[in-house]
Image (cartoon, helix red, strand yellow):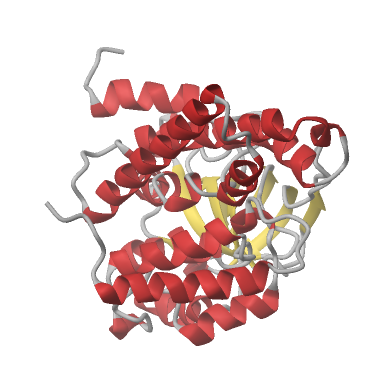
Length: 365
């Protein structure tokens, strides 16, 4: 069986790699660029190249291209450290969610700016007291005079300080079972009553944010999908979030740096390089299986757990190879400090293993 790409995909990948390297040139950090790389000009360039909304229907303003075309483009851009932070969430999951659940008016109003790279979206999911338990969301959305009024707080909201929109999950029925009383909203972050506070982490990054909502009023057309229908909608959205190539190659450039400077005469080092390289091959196949639709529901949890644990191992390997540099402020120390986040953000490995057992394997609770 021939696993090689057709010539047109190879050419597209080379083009995206060249664009990614040019965009990353001069940036002190190439790792995790889909989270921390916030570059409005590059976002517009992605729009001009037709690399946003690649797989969305042409009738909805997308480009009608294949999932494999999007894969080779995004793999190359992330692996080279291109700054995708302003567009990634919108392209990865907001657009597909609007296509699946948004109204005709919402799609006409919101999708064009996403495809053009003019706006950025953040995810209002996690809360201070909820952790990984989305069903424990307390942020409330109340119907008052034909409008929705939002009160509450979200945390770990990546990119909110630079975003124009927030995909908000709020409790609309406090008397319903925990997972059944939630609804989704498209929330304009310029509205009155919103306070956004960046959170600086141990690496010095401040892409994480806390958002407070105090009597924020939304029009009725801000509701996405069905009232109290968030659980099904968000579970589908998380399939996009967990199983993408971003969960495998966030720090691929760090691996390449370490590989170039590793002691190739050491059999132990060669063995470690072979193990990590094999991990990349396995992780890539897992991602591709999800893209072509050959995995069972819930399997994205396995893909995310495997890939992000490999990312942590890559950072640890780089630390061992580059040695004393890990003690100096810079790219390596930043990568080592950031590494624990890989298996926390987007769902902890512990939660994901529970999902694998219960949903993918059907094991008893």
